[in-house]
Amino acid sequence: MILQASSFIFLVAFHIAGSAVENVTLYEHASSEGEFTTINLSGSECFNLPEDWYDRASSIETNDSCVILWSRSDCSGNSERIAPETNSNSNFEDIYFNDIIRSLKLCTSPAEASEARYIGVQEHNFWRQIHQTSSINGDNENLHQAAQNHAEYLVKNNLFLSSSKNQNLAEVKAYTAEKAVRNAVKSWYKEERHYDYGNPGFQTDSQHFTALVWNATSQVGIGVEWDPTKRRYIVVANYDPEGNISGQFEENVKLPKRRQPLPVRFYEHRFYEGEEVLMEVIGGCHNLPEGWVNKTTAVKVSGWCLALWNQPACKGKSLKLNYDVKNLVKLNLNDAVGSFNLCSDVYDSILH
Picture 1 (cartoon, rainbow, N blue to C red):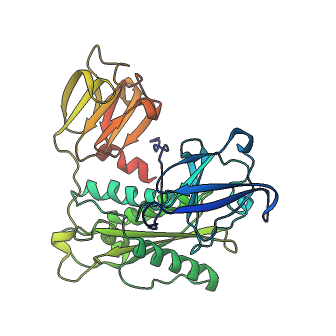
Picture 2: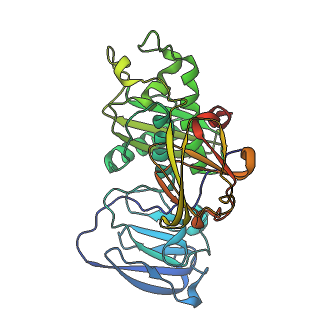
Picture 3: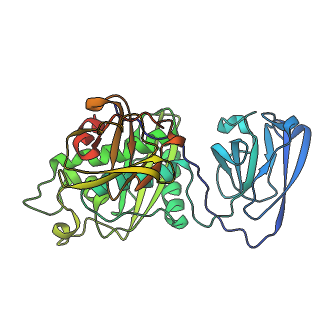
C-alpha cells in the first residue's frame, strides 16, 4: 500500500491589503458566549494563542475578516478557513474544530488553496506526469469558487449535472473532504483503461480521464460539498483552458510514461548535504547500495513520482513522493529507506 504524505500546510484565497490590522474575537463557548479574548491580526503574521486559551475556543467573531485557524502553534497542523463569503460556520463544533485551536492568521495569500483544493491540484499533477503532461496550477480563486458554488448548488437541488463541458464531477463516499477529492481524481483517471490512443478523439467512457490529463489545460478549480441526504461528497473540478476539444486529442492526450531512465539522488543529510549517491533507474524495484540502507535523509528526483520503502525488495512501509525534492525528516522516514521504485510501476495498484 502506498501511503500519502499528510503533513501539508494550507492557506486559502483572499487578498487583504497591506498591513491593515483586523480584530478577531474568540469565545469559550458556542454562539459567541462565555469568556472571550480579542486578537489583533495583521499581514501574514501567525498569532499563537496564550496557553490559557490552548484548545479552548468554541466560536469566533471575525468582523468580516477571512481567518485561518490552526490546530497547532506557529500555524501548523490541521487548518480551517473562516470567511464571510463561505458557508463555514463560526461555531467550531459545526466544522469539527472545537477546542483544538492554538494559532491563527489572516488569509493574506491571494490565491492559495485549502487542504481539499491543495490535494486536488496535487493529485491532478500526479496522474498528469505519468503522461508527460504539463503541471496544472490551482491559483485561480474564481475557478475554485465557481466549482464550489456548483457543488453546493447540486447538493441543494439534489442534482448531478455538469454546468459546462470543462468540468469533471464525482459522487464519493469518504470520511473527509480531502479523501473525497483524492478518490474523485483517482476515479476519473481509472477511465484511462478505456481510452483508445490509436483512435484519438472524444470517447464517452473516458471523457473524465482526458479532461484530467489534457496538456493545454493550465488551471484547475476544486469544489467539494457534503450531501447529507446521500451521505456522500460531491466533488467538482473546473478546467481552464477547457479540454476535450474535437481535433486536438492527439497532441493533448499523451501516451503514459512507463519505463524511462530517471536520475534519483540520495543524500546523507537533509538540505542535500553530506555524502550522496546517484542512481539511474528504469522501472522495477531498486535496493539502495551497500552502506546506504537506513542512511538517507533527503531525496531529489526530477519530474516523477517515487515510492520509498523501509525494507529491501520494496516491502514494509512505504511513502509516495510526488514532488521534485523532499527532506525525509518531516515525513518520519529519516534513516529508514531500504529500497524504492517509480510510481509508474505501482500506479495500477494505487488505483485499486
